[in-house]
Image (cartoon, rainbow, N blue to C red):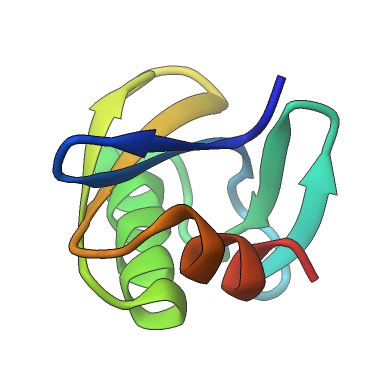
Length: 92
């Protein structure tokens, strides 16, 4: 299964989040997800906001969390980008 899938508004990206890391970064593909490390703790939605901000900055477009708010596995919708562009930015 691919981590980046075409959507009517852009793409959806499945991510595996590691909150409370020493730095915020995209680690690349991890099974059927993109592994993302964020320095923010998981309390109060701070890690979720950090993931959304990171993906917006790396891929471009407007990102929003659409699944997995309380899970390490999340689904992010990124509007205004295509699969090829998102894959080039995320699957290093």
